[in-house]
Structure formats: structure tokens, C-alpha cells
Image 1 (tube, helix red, strand yellow):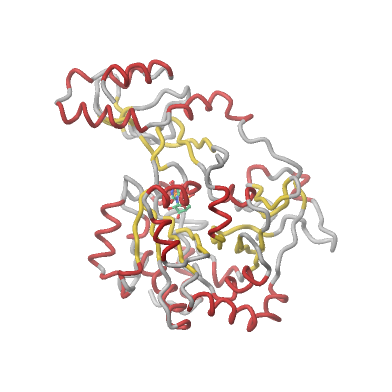
Image 2: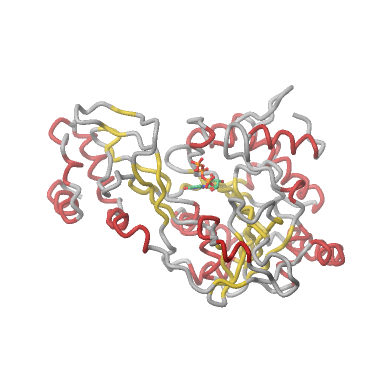
Length: 408
Ligand code: UTP
């Protein structure tokens, strides 16, 4: 894209200030800025004006959940189906590690955080150890695809290399990068983080399959005969990955996606709850939980929206291919965004000063025809690290690791 084209594109979206320092830049910097302008979707910025009306909800109703007693009864049968699929190379895992982890307060990728007390135990290491349990049980490697972002790709790849993949077979590990989205002030005016660079933020975890496609990783998935992808978050250090019983249950029930869920600790707990929305599987986010939904009862008289998702989904690849072109809802989230002030100096704000724009993996569920919500024991499988202290923190996750016999 040349200067004139960049100018016209910016003018169309009211973002001409992006070129404020253009004349001060050297040739390489000019080129980098023009490329970023070319690749940026400015359309999203105009949406913050209609933020509240952006994602209207349909009719919410309870969904059937496969609960622990039923799973126990069929554990052997499902585990066998799952192990057969893993041994046949049909199950891959996707580690979502493109987030910024701002709440944890470290600039490094979340996975390199050391939660050890007497020795080093990195978050990535915990995940690999968990996956190794299944590799040993099945006697087969599970292909692992790791999503990073522009902000953490090099550090993440180098870390895995330095640590020799924590014993995982590097031939089965593939990295790919997600896209970035512009970050703006509250009026939708994109911030600059350098004279030749707009402020950006990873565009959410919802674009993972599209990014896999862009990077040619889905070709590899197809060639390798992978039919199921277990997508999971980086920050749950008790995460069970490619769990054979879960895989088997999802296959046996012919579901397009399986979603691991836990019983919520309170009706207003900050996790998304599984539901039906206009008759299709969906997740109602905690901030959309009205007092009526919190008080609602199911046919058995229990709480109707009692099961929360833990960001562990098993997607059937062929169904993903069908929905990949659909645009997912956009979520606009307040954030602290570093920016250049009037004097051209970089400011790192202490408080949120604008918006980031994200698509979320949980919105993919609503696009699919069938979903198996599958209950797991919370204290064994859910130890998310979002914050430094308090709820869902390094402290709470350490305690849960210790309760599960994991030495730290
Ligand atoms: P979170 O919603 O906790 O976001 O991500 P985050 O960016 O890691 O943390 P905060 O909100 O800034 O503190 C849930 C999962 O989705 C991944 C994260 O890496 C984590 O595994 N994620 C999130 C991405 O891969 N890309 C994104 O753009 C956002």
C-alpha cells in the first residue's frame, strides 16, 4: 500500500492522525507503518459507539449436561473410544497462548510464569506434564498446536526450545500466530504506541481456527488425519488435555463439540454458563446473567444454569470447516493501552483508557448444531491463574496443585 492509498483508507475511517509523524520516519519505518495500515481492520473501531446494542441475546433455556454419575457409569466404555481415537492420531490439542495476561501483571507470556516454590514449575511445563499422562496412557503422541501473538511469539518459541519442550516430542509441536486488532480510546480513535506503529492487542481467542488456516496449519491437520481438536487455555494448571474419557463421550454422543464444565460455586460466579439460546447450544456470560436467570430452576428443581465452562472444548474439525467463514460477535473490552501523548512520548497508563476488540472461542459453540456439556470435578481440573493474588490466582492454583499431589 502506498502513502496515497493509506491516506484514503484512514480518511474513510476518521483515523488520519496515524500519519502525524510520517514525515519524521526513515524509509523502513514508513514501510512498516504503511503495511500495518494495509493489514488493519478499522471497521471494528466504529462499533464502540453502539457497544451496548452489539450482541443482543436470544431466548435462553437450560441445556442437558452429562453429569458425573452418568460419566462414572460409562467411564470404561468412553475411555476406550477416546484412547482408540488418540492412538489412531485423530486427536490434536490447541493451546491458546496468545493472550496478554495483563491481570497477572507480567509482560512475559503467561506460560513462562514460574509457580514453583522449591523448584521451577512453569505454567507451560504443567500443561505438558498433564498432556504427557495421556501420551503415556495411549502410547502415542498427541499433535500440539500452540497459538501465540505478535506480542509473545518469539519469547514463547524460544522458551520451548530452551526447555527442550519439557520432554515433549518437538516433531509434534507446531506454533502459529493469531491476528492483532487496533486498540483505541473511548471514541474509537486508534492509539499510537510508536511514531510508526498503531497500538494493537491480540484479537481474542475466537480466531484460533481462522489463524490456523492462515498459517497453513489446518493443511497439516488434514494431512495428519486429525479429526478432533481439543482447545484449551494456557492458564489452567490442572487442565486435562486430550482426556480420553471426554474424547470418547464426545465421539460416542456424535456431538460437534464437547465442552468441559464445572458446577458453579455461586449463581453469580464469574464463569460463562452453558445453556440453549434460541434452541441452539450456547454460553451465557456472567455479565449477561440476569437475576431471573440466576434464580431459574430446571425440570428437577435444581439451578437451571449451574454449569460453567472452563475453556476446554473438543471440536470436530469437519464442523469447524463449515463455520469458519462466519463472523463471530465482537466483544469490546476496557483496557490499559500504552500510547504516545501530544509530545510524542510513550505513556503506560495505570487505569483503563480505552478499548480492545475481541472475538471469543465460546461464541463458536452457538454456531455448531450439537454440543455435549461434560461435567468434571472442579478441584481436580480447574485451577486458573488470572490474578497475582486472591481468586483465580497463583496462590489459589498452588493450593489446588498441592491438593492434587503436584510438587511445587
Ligand atoms: P483471558 O480471557 O484470560 O485473557 O484468556 P488474557 O489476555 O490471557 O488475560 P488478561 O485478561 O489480559 O489478564 C483466556 C485464554 O485465551 C487466550 C489466553 O492466552 C488464555 O489461554 N487468549 C486470550 C488468546 O490466545 N488470545 C487472545 O487474544 C486472548
